[in-house]
Length: 87
Image 1: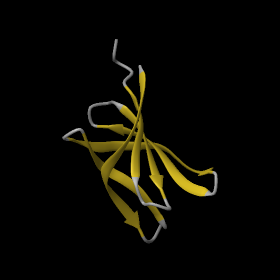
Image 2: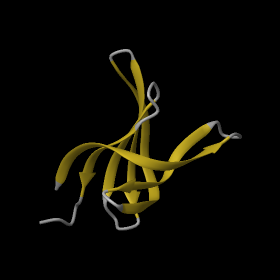
Image 3: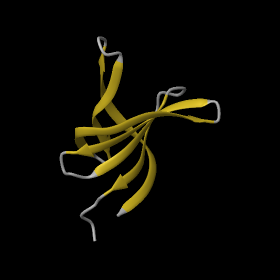
């Protein structure tokens, strides 16, 4: 089951200077924290003139999320929740 959320969230991310890459490691949504177990995909995309980075991640509770990082405003958005085990 997939649900579109589109809410701003707080994110803790990590930047590796040797690899020149960053990725989210934990985020906070609706009073709960979600530790990211795996980053499945990451891709940059343009929305108009704005560059965003989209991350498909899996949290420790095995729920998948789509996170969007806006490089212009530096906001993080929880765009979508995908719970494969929901009925």
